[in-house]
Image 1 (tube, rainbow over the protein chains, first blue to last red):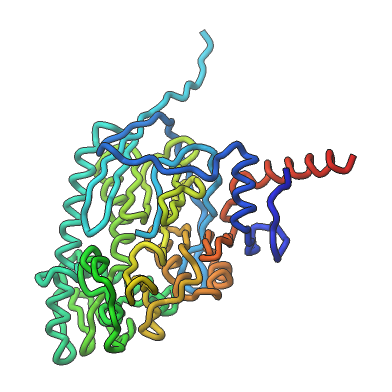
Image 2: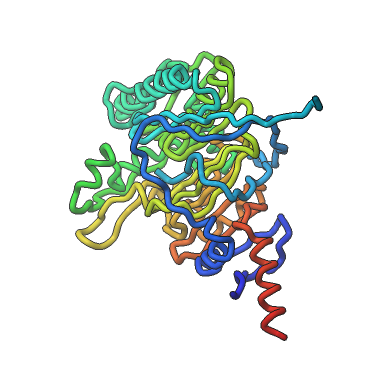
Length: 88
Length: 331
């Protein structure tokens, strides 16, 4: 199976803007066994529970000249979403 | 017997409720505090609604706007209004005015002049006027929380109030209750307290309800701004407007992006960045990159742009698979 394609710029260093076509992202999801493209389950109750474990971590950050705070990127996850961010 | 560290599963529980015109969710790592956590969140959102809603005439925002109709006006703000306004002015400052709380009259002129359900039910909306954006620099709030606005100013905290409330509630919960929390107010996400192992898993949800990607936050705020969800018809069966206004023009921002998701030091900063990105349109990736904001920008053409290390799902594994496939194909 053909892997994902990446348009310019081609560098994959953390500081670059990367553009991926929808087809490439879909290919990634398929080759990864499906995760990455998941459908949200309908919420049918007001209280749900799942199993996880607890730990304590911190996020490094630094102020930029504008006052916005540069932060570490979130990590990719292979698990199911516990919550979702959307534009509503 | 050997001593071993055993990682025991801890339940994550969730409560969901409607408030401030959206769906809100509180996730907690301690079942016993969920009810109290939800009550704290509801109480804060009730106070927020009374302070800053554009859709209830008894809100502080509406009463101030009514007084400003005839000239500059001032009022002594409640602590909730004062804090939300200061947060909005912070967002304006760090985005160089791309996110401006004085766009209220322009938002109304563009058609978002009532509760969203009522706006959506219209067959069409024809713009009849262009409203001024007085500018966030002309809003003053002093040390005693007295707010002064210029003539004709309608404060609209729609871009930042939810996100700031998520940060505020997350802080309140961490101060008052044990365990870890994820506060999700209509997609604006803040976390506090101990994290679940690996962090909180958050899906980036598109307008059709699909989760396009799952990422984990280990303290970052997350927010998404969309041009596809809060929309209404501007002529029957054809064009649609969305709710994000470009303060530089007073007009609906371009629909270059279907949605933009950002990580920030807080939900407020994440939301400020995602809203600014919508306003900037094609210039957004460079701006986000320059400000160190990890972001995922979903173009209306289906192309996805990532900045500052926002992860591609399983990119390393897929690259390895592609290399193996290429090697096999070349044999």
